[in-house]
Length: 269
Image 1 (cartoon, rainbow, N blue to C red):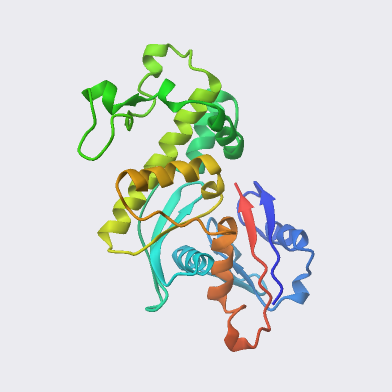
Image 2 (cartoon, rainbow, N blue to C red):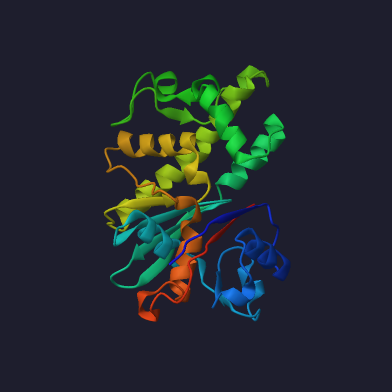
């Protein structure tokens, strides 16, 4: 089975035109595929289009995360514009949305645009890697005079807690570090708690935001400080949800003799 990946930058709401552009990005004609699996966003608006199979997002997230990570059961964390968390169990064939947060890449881009004049999450995260979040955040050591429970004194007590005192004079890279840290820590803490609440052996992070090195390292640090098994960030996780949709639609199932071709399309918004 051939596998191709393509990315459309900010394609807008789902529409036949976006679908046409996606197929063009893959250099394939609609006549050459048995089915096109779509999920997320306004994908339901495409129901009724020829060859389109609409897959519910929890199923696409769960199946794609498990396939990408090579595990059977996990909390699948889809880090996109917002963040969705799915209890995924391949053995039981169940993929259930259990929690999430509106904090995600859209938050980072919105705040980055307003405060830094930068509206791409990847650019903000690159700035963050050159900055120091402790210049804009306050730590437990500063607030309490020490750590709290198992948390060290250097752990964040208040995200962006220094900004008021700085009077808007924070360095751009430091502010980017504070913003990106806030988003990553929020996602990481919610995922850690959801994983524990549902007794899951793994947490698998997929989606465009999860590929950003600064976000990945911060989520890993959150799990480490609480002594929890390291989360999984599988290769190709940025298109895992598209892959999960393709699997769910049946186009890449071994049962069909390999007739379908796996061609995920990732849309960046």
